[in-house]
Every structure is written in structure tokens, then in C-alpha cells.
Image (cartoon, rainbow, N blue to C red; front, top):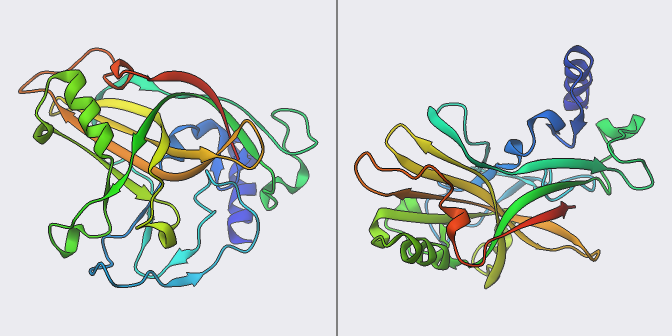
Length: 250
């Protein structure tokens, strides 16, 4: 209820549209959240739940997961400086509640998110996710997108040491049994002040309803093409098999 009060106040002051813990005006960037597990030091240490979710929430909202002990929800960005943010950004198209017109928020929108869906235009690619052996306690509970790393290296003619792709699972109970093949969707690609390409996006699986997708995780990748070298266009869009799709997330 505290969040409801804050949402009402901000929406009244700024005219933003509240959508399950985020704002329509901040989509799709605000989809780039993940659960940080670095504070759980040992691979065998269980993820303890402090508070489970109480009501149905869309899979794309950071409100969907339980509150874990020693884990944080992280929304990247804000602290880093980008100087070329326009290589690629997904497009938010619309939102809809069940039995309501498109882009209409019912009076219950502040606290009842059941059935809320959003539609975006995204660049998608099929990838394989595998657990990565930790290099130390601080690097545990980390998964790698091996096939994405290989595809990027092959496409760009680079050694895999000059790039990396990692994955953060939304449901920590399934952390070590990730799906073999997932649809990954690029949300943003930027170049930082060190001429490094930074990519961020979502891992998706088919929803229960035909034509819908549910979020299962967050992925990020970086590519260093060389000293003072960067591409003026998205390198993700150069991968073989990438498609621009209209995706409805539930």
C-alpha cells in the first residue's frame, strides 16, 4: 500500500501512467532489472525467501518475484556515462488490461495487475544458457550465454576473450536447470566511454496463451572491438537469425 500511495502522488504530479511497479513513460528501459545473487557466497547455499509475492503480477515486472534474503533487485543504469546511446533501443507499443481498451488504465490499476500485458517491438535471437563454473565465491550463481558469445565472436571475427555474455535467472529455484534454448530479446545497445559495446535484454519463453511471452530472466553482454574502435550500428542486429518481432509480454 505504501507503493500505491507513492504511485498515486507521482502520477498526479507528473501525469505518468503506472504499470505494475514502473511507468509507461520509462518503458522499455525499466524492464532491465535483475536479481543480484553475488551476496550468496557459496554455490550450495540456498536462496532463502523472506516474503513471497502476494498477488498475480506480470512476469516483466520487478514486483513478480519473492523477496530473497541476501539478494537485491538491481535496475542497471543511472551511474554509468554513455556517449552514444542510439545504436539500438526496443520500442514500447502499448499496454492492455483484460476486457479494457488499449492504453486504458482502470481505477484498480495501482494494485491489481492480474492480466496486464505490454507489447513491444524487439530484436530477438535464439540462444543457449548454461551454468558457468565460479572463479571464486564472489562470482558464484552466474550463468553464461555460451552460444551468444560464440555467435558474436564468429560474426565479428573476435577472440571470445574480448567479449562476454551472462544471464540472471528470475526464478532462483530453477537457477541450475535453465532451459536449453530460449528466445533472447535485445532492449538496448550502447557504446560507453571506453568504446565498448554494452548490450542488455530479456530472456523469454512462450506464455500459456498463444501469441504471448513470459519473461524468465535478464541478460547482458559486452564486446570490445579494440582500442578506440566501435561500430556505428548495432552489432546484435548483425547476428545470423536475428528478427525484429512484435512481442506481447504477460
